[in-house]
Amino acid sequence: MVSIIDYDMGNLRSVQKGFQKVDVEAQIIRHPEEVLAADHLVLPGVGAFRDAIAALKTRNLIEPIREFVKTGKPLLGICLGMQLFFEKSYEDGEYEGLGLIKGEVIKFQLSDKSLKIPHMGWNSLTFSKPCRLFDQLPADPYVYFVHSFHCCPADRDVVAARTDYGGEFVSVISSDNLFAAQFHPEKSQTIGLQMLKNFASL
Image (tube, rainbow, N blue to C red; front, side):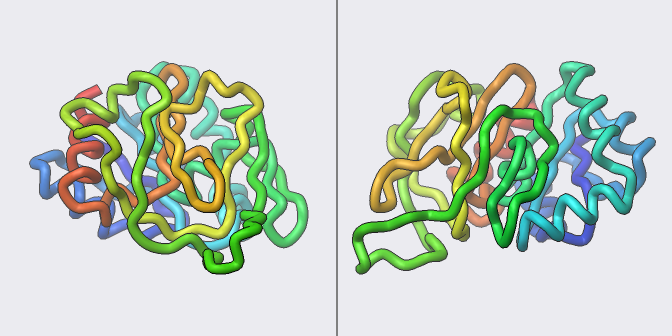
C-alpha cells in the first residue's frame, strides 16, 4: 500500500491513478498518525514552496514526515515535494524546508533567452548513479517537467539523475530510503509509471 499525503498542494488524484494503472494500491491520507503508519509514503506538490511548508505546519505533518524517514521506509517526493526535502528555498523570500537533504532550492538563471521559465514539457534524464527507481528504464528516458526552481544539494552523492535545460540541474535524488523526482512521473506515461511501480516494489 502506498500512502499519498494530502496537504492541499498536490495533484493527488493523478498520482493515485498513476499507481493504480500499474496495479499498486494507493490511498490518500491527511493525518499525522496515518503518516507514521504508512509503508510507502509519497509527498506530491504543485504550487509555491512557502504555501506548501505552511500547509504542512498547519496540519502538524512536518515532524511525522521526519519520523517516518527515520524508520527506513521509502519516501518519494514529486516536483514541489522534492524541493520540500531540502533545507531552504528562495522562492518569493527565504523559507525553511524539511531538512531531509542538505542544500537549497533556487530559481533558474538562464543565459539562453530562447528558453522559457517555467521549464515546461518533455526533457530527458541522464543517469548519474544506479537507482532502484530506474529499474527497466531505457537510457536517457524522457519525462514531463513543470517548474521554475531547481534543487542544489550540498552532497553530490545524492544525485541520481540530471537534466539539461540551459545547463544541467538535478532531476532525481536518491539517498538511502529517500527518493525524489523534479518531474511528474504520473504525467510521464510509460516511463513515469514504471518508476512509480519501482518505488512501490521497494
